[in-house]
Image (cartoon, rainbow, N blue to C red; front, side):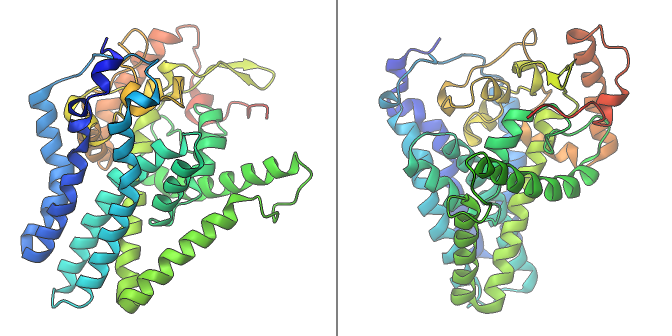
Length: 377
């Protein structure tokens, strides 16, 4: 176990700061133009896949009781990302809309920016939204507004963590459900479930959905401001480029969501009750390099076990406690885009997981189709 004293040193946090390198990279490739533009997605997908192969797994765990005061370098990273991403995104809109780059080059630059704001920005917003401090949660809201996906906070905190692995969670990918079917479903259902969750939360206090306490007003205001700023800086062209970036980021997020819980369901106990969430209900991956880039998001089994645990303290769970992905997210998200390959890799693992943890269940059809009863509220 890594002691708390080691975590307080800047050297402990340094590998996670690798995400910062993407900022000079996207500016350098934008200025170079041409095929150089593809370096950003290649670096996040393929370079880290290769690095995972070279660095292997990190199964060492940090002391989970380490206080925030000893994680200042880790916390600083997630706190400074929002202004960095903001300046990069709108700086690129200003530069590209005034350049003589081709339409294909402009698309490539903002596709690359979307890879950054999805792989890093939304991921950091996820870390921030789980914290208790208002400042960090606001930073998370700002990051989500830059990709027009602000409702993700409500859906994630009020729906996903509570109902993961049940029919009421839109984000749990069903067994044999390809990503191309999952994606439109989750886009539609997540927005509706997020709004419904906030409306029901207000109703319990005898307030209407239109009450000022509904965070959707903040979501809409922040998103509107981001859209307006893109329009003011870059005109209609700037708005289109902004939307390309946002769409790419959302696609990146939902690819990860698809991978994290594919085919994993909680056992129905009867009377609208399901077993408690445990590490076995999320796929775990402890590939070292990609966890540097993704600030340990791949230790997702522990995140659902302890949602408020900061990223440097997330624990690795062995095969006995949680199912393991064969590769890190950079490889698995690419595989998810190829349904026959995905099913070939993952379906046998889901069936093995079922035999390991639930040998008593003989009929999985209701779980496959999300037809078990809806959980009690």
